[in-house]
Length: 149
Image (tube, rainbow, N blue to C red; front, side, top):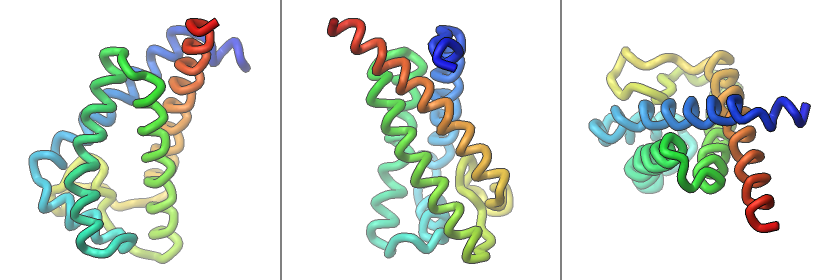
């Protein structure tokens, strides 16, 4: 298993995929912050003010971490940050699925009616992205050890 995870093409593919997904995901949220803030609030996880603050900062974090992964800088930090975000996304979606709340995921579009409803497919998608993030994180940590040795 370790040999597969050490494959440079797998690591590169995961890094580029994760970076591209998060750059794409950030774009509409940056252009429509009020609509995204409404979607964040609809998750019913945060009060209004923290929800708005989260909605204003999250897309920029996604954009910068995604770009960093694409260009190959700050790989460890970016993959760790995006992996942590994915754990939170998986948790928020799972909690709302358990609650029976039907809402747009807010993942890629802020337009009403254009977003996807959350479901097990959303959780599965985020688990796949988390796996890619962990592959990149593992590789970047091993790379850091080799440079430090």
